[in-house]
Image: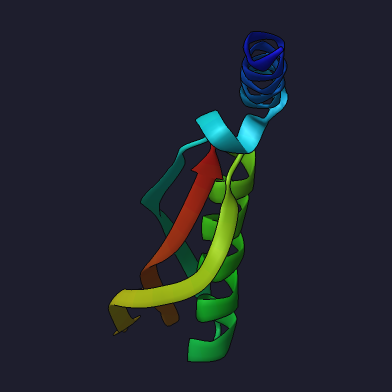
Length: 93
């Protein structure tokens, strides 16, 4: 009788492992880059943030909402602000 109980428990455990995506899933963290121009600093930041979010989303990822501004400068030749930022992103297998 004990053998059947152990087989049943073992079979239930194996089936739960096979059908559980969380048991095999891995989370990958990475950075995406966004660049943007604007008439002012805020507009350039919003454009860069939008493009970084799109790069994350199109790569089947989700944004962590963590952003690091890499470059923020006014370009006198064009009269526009330029912002380049890195945004955290993760995806699950």
